[in-house]
Image (cartoon, rainbow, N blue to C red; front, side):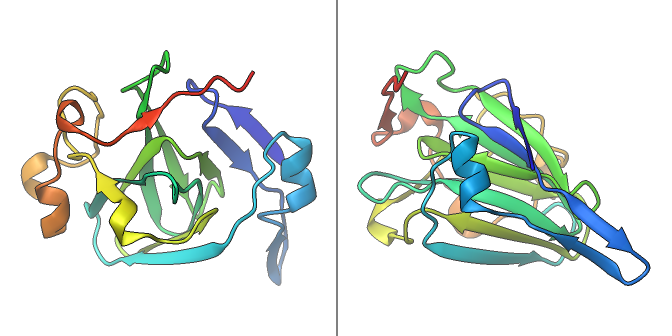
Length: 189
């Protein structure tokens, strides 16, 4: 398993090894020891599975606050997405910046998004499925979000605003500047 830094050091791209032959393939997509050796000591408690019927489905930007903040390990098992993590840790030198990574069944990459980041994705292909592990349980009272197309974030989404397929909730999320509940940056080095 290879782990790559992104422009925001706490967000990582994971490259699981994949072994294939005429029968199919085998891949170890998560191993506690391998992650721990790479400095990612994570205790996952829940697996989520999302299906998106059309290209242009946009979900996000979502996050959960402490004490139920979630880190996510995201991968695509069918189709492709542009996956985005936005730093929302007040005081971080990368506050308001984002990392955008294409995840697909073909490239087999995963994205580790720690707590303190808002997460969203846009499907690039129809019939796209994502699986993601989280390190805390869903908590409706700690569930928050930022408007997906906030101009201050400068995310280059692969769909025009008028064609994005959004939930009613995601259409009305506040901008980053209007958030009253974010994370405080803690330098752990």
